[in-house]
Length: 333
Ligand code: PMV
Image (cartoon, rainbow, N blue to C red; front, side, top):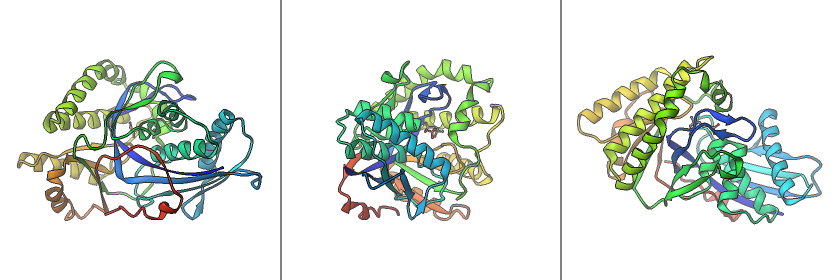
């Protein structure tokens, strides 16, 4: 009654922001992402009569109570499916440095879902796993399938899940994460989603999104970095405009964020095909093709406000692994 799973974090090119159903985490819009090779969570779940309550650890530490309750609630859903009442021990570890402001809820809930379902011998399809992971944390739905992923918003819980558009080998893209702040965010994305619709721009965003999604899927299919990167950037700016104009406003940027954005525009003007995107935090994700990695790395490693650089390629979705291999997970550069 024990299983270990590894799941990647993902970077959204078309962002999920705003929910139609809080409890079920049904998103206001569809989104598109890529799984990240160097930002993963590995989680072991063991159900046993030896435990009198769920015991949840992140790294060497006990999890904060509010987070542990959210994990326990998710375990409860999976126990219900398996008609099992045993408590579990959960040991979870991120292979990216802690306190980097990189959201680990996508990788965390995807790994938890797969490991818990595996430990209870639930035979779930990729679609069912994606739905379950989504209820734990929306963007976790996208960390289940391989490579480049689309999460169709759907209307009901049963039709809101992610599927792979292309596997990880399709396009040698990079997401070079520039960590400029090691602080966790003050307002969680769960909370932020709730107020998205109060932005005067939200309705317009939803109206325009189907066309934007059609265009980015076209650019992805053609591996057209210019069209793709331009949409990725516009989308990141739009996300943060919504955040800044919702009530209460949300400012996730710091001063380094804007410096890096300016720098990216400058490097692009000088001929380097590089684009930026941002999630619910100040760290900037640089998107370019693999052939540009060395040049980009040379440029960014000299920036004084960059505390850490994490280079990611596209990778597979969540999978069951041997418990022993959890230690062979040193992939950070
Ligand atoms: O799944 P959550 O609640 O962490 O929301 C993710 C929100 C963004 O990272 C801003 C966008 C996205 O689609 O990943």
